[in-house]
Image (cartoon, rainbow, N blue to C red; front, side, top):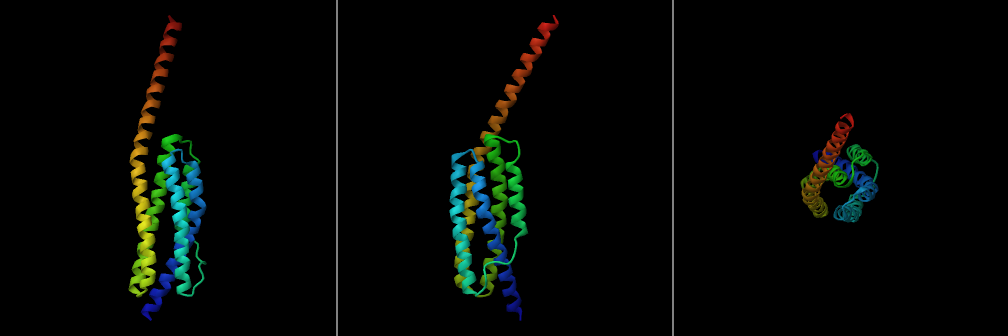
Length: 187
């Protein structure tokens, strides 16, 4: 009886991940399009390719357990994707927008890492060694993507900071010019 309930939980979590990954296949092209940094755009395009492989691996597992690969909407991913879409609608530009997109993407990666870690452990408990290796492969790819995003963030966040400082200096310079111009007119 205990294995049966753990197995049901396992299938439930797999369906959740499957839906999450299919939602992500629709969101990643939009994130890539919104990115101004070529490396970031390329990282999203690569992760889209990987995500398609993640979906295929999950479909393999569903075939092994003789279950249909659908049936559960992942509300967590839905919220994260919506939040990312809202971020891309903000008035941020250039590196600042890229930094915002990376933040949204890292939230998604951490969610996926957590989900795959959970199902991998459940597969281990159930003795599903074939599943464990497929899930571990995906988990490692998700972790690598997170590391790549972190590396990109270090560079892009610095660029965004520099851009922000340049903008502030330009704004301050324009304010000084306006102030001098107003003083001359008053005299």
